[in-house]
Length: 388
Ligand code: SDX
Image 1 (cartoon, rainbow, N blue to C red):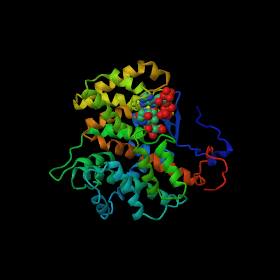
Image 2 (cartoon, rainbow, N blue to C red):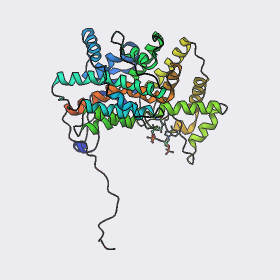
Image 3 (cartoon, rainbow, N blue to C red):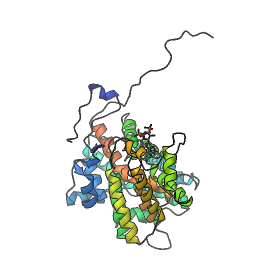
Image 4 (cartoon, rainbow, N blue to C red):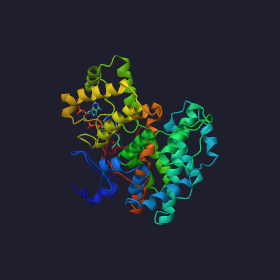
């Protein structure tokens, strides 16, 4: 439970790595950021404080946290020429595709790869990334709606700005609802890092060639988009909506998920590491009840989710394979209650995961890890003589 494991000396070429950022225990359903339990952080902290902890290794003092928020504000103005890039996309472009492109484009405006050994330079790169990524992430939504792009308001908080950037219209100011801001803040904390998942490993792999931070994060955005990874939260809602529209028969969809001849999987269930409850799913399920209750939202989709979860947890196929709800099973229900459109759900995941990507990239470069080069087991032809 100390989280320290021994790696074989060949780990340098195996694609696995040593990291001191996040500890998972899949059997016990434990998740800790820099040694702090996710339950404590979700309950008592806030997203920027957790981002600072994950990236710099220690909880900030009140003064450091205040300065961190101020320093992020210095970089929330995105180069106006980036609008030419976003104008090049059709309204129908998926927000994750636009986000990956815009993040990569930020490399063009920040070509100098940060010197990770220079703490001031690295701190500036962290603030710049946290500031600009939030804004361009919301621009993907504004683009899809044909709305004018919004600017960050330096008089407001980071998470409140997300809602303003998304929903404030020229016709009037966005009225922040503390229940919504608190729920989002908690959701971002729960997504902030998760050890060597697919997108984080991608960020580390791309960064190991000494590609810049924005270029590495752009690759992480693309990896996260997949429906088996971060795209699952959108797939969960689409699955639940389909179950609802076809009469709410959970057992029918469980049967489909168990049928090996049917490609359908129960989205939001199962995990590569957790063979017990994903601790984040428990917290999000509780938050879903609280948020929908406080907002007075009656969502039949939540009832379908609970019915499906209960049936799956009783089902031998799922129990025998240790398949439990994961972080994506309930998150989309809260996003939907907050008025966030389904195709923005994975963008929400990316905003939450950003501090983890930054921290893992920074750790990999500070550790001067060699360029990633996993080896293979060759199963192809033996030597053959060339003749026609
Ligand atoms: C995330 O890595 C991370 O940490 C990721 C993440 C993060 O924070 O970064 O936690 C975020 O990506 C969560 C996962 C979101 N994805 C989904 O919810 C998609 C649905 N889940 C599955 O596709 C699946 O569970 C995976 C992809 C998550 C894991 O796939 P694996 O590793 O192949 O699952 P497994 O080896 O544990 O499968 C064991 C068995 C297999 O059946 P058998 O061959 O034994 O008969 O369970 C079956 C699988 O077919 N199975 C499922 C299933 N998940 C696994 N059957 C039906 N529905 C499912 N969801």
